[in-house]
Length: 126
Image (tube, rainbow, N blue to C red):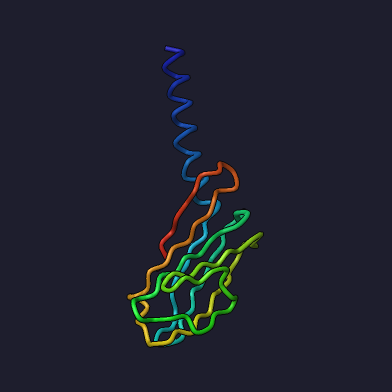
């Protein structure tokens, strides 16, 4: 009987700890604008990860003309930003594109490592 209570207690603690780890730290993004000027609005939870990466894929034939902040790498249709030591709160990436693009035609993701358990997360930009 004692063993059953011990197992139940361990399972209960495990189940309630998983959502709290996911909820405490998250980095998410959403698109705003459209046409040749598109923003990626970023939200960084608390505690923030040590760093996160934003990967943006552009539709065929569309090129990045300018971006603020400047990307760490731009290889044709794939653009990459690296944010080191981010603070909790909001940030944004402003992109100027060579051709008008609807935001629903953009595909991007955010990758980061959880600061407490080291688990890798990947969030789609919406």
